[in-house]
Length: 361
Ligand SMILES: *Cc1c(COP(=O)(O)O)cnc(C)c1O
Image (cartoon, helix red, strand yellow):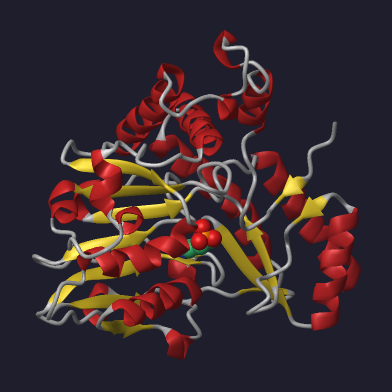
C-alpha cells in the first residue's frame, strides 16, 4: 500500500495508526460480535466510547470541570446558527471579528437570528493578517465576541488571543484545535468540526461553560439547544457513534505522542520546512499571509504565473501529492499540514517545491 502525501484541507489526513486500529476493530468491536456502528448508543460499550473520548479531550486541553464537552452533528456551520440562537438574548448583540471566509459565514448566520456587528475586520488587507487586540472595539451590550482562531482558506492564525473584560469569548477552532496548548478558561465556548484535526466529518466538538448553557432561552427547538445535549451527555438522540469512536482514537494518539506541547513543536517543524522553501525562493513562491500571522495548519502561497500554478498542481498530483490546490474562492496553492500530516509528507513537498522551482524559474 502507498499512502498519498495528503495535504487536503478537510476532510483531511487521519493518522495511519488510527486508521489501522479502527480497521482491526471494524467488524467485531471488543468481542461484541458487531461493529461499533451496529450497536445501541445506549449500550455500555458505546457509553464507554463516549465517556473516554470526553475524558481524554478534557485531559489533553486541561478543560476545567465547569465546562461541558458535547459531540454534536451538523458541522461547525450549524454552530454558526446555534451560538446566536442560544446566547443572543433581547437587547444584546453578537460581536464578530471578521478575519476571512469562515468568520464571515459565522457573522452572517448571526444576523439571521438577531443583531450582530463586526467589531474588527481585516478585509482591507485581503484577510492576510489577524487584527491586534487593540483594533477590536466591543460594544457594551455584546453577548459575546466571536473569533476564528485559524482561517483555513486565507492561512492566517491568531498567535495569541484577545481578551475582553467581562465579555464571553467564543472561538471557532475547526482548523487548529489540539494543534497547540490553549487556556480553555479564557473562552466561554470553543467549537470545531472534527474533519480537520480530530477525525472524520460528521462530529462537531463543543466545549462550553456551564453557566452559558443554563441561560439558553426556552423558545428554541430541543436539537438546537446546548442544554438538551449537555443534560443528555450527548446522547439525546442517536449520536454519530462511529465518528465519536474515531475521534476517541485520534485523541489517544495525540496523548501517546506526548500531548499538545509536543504536537505544537512537531507542527512548527513541519511548516518551517515549507515556509523556508517559500522564503528562500527569491520570489518564485510568494507566501500569502503576513509572516506574523502565518498559519501552522494551512500554508497558502502563490507562483507569480497562474499557468505555472496549474502546472505545479498537475505535476504534484503525478508525484503523489493530494490537495495542494488553493480554495476555489481565492485560487493559488495551499498545503494543509494538520496534526496527522507526517513529517515525511512535508519533507517530500519541500523537495518537490525546490525541484519545481529549479526546473521552471
Ligand atoms: C471547515 C471549517 C468550517 C466548516 O465546517 P463544517 O463542519 O463543514 O460546517 C468552519 N470554520 C472553519 C474555521 C473551518 O475550517
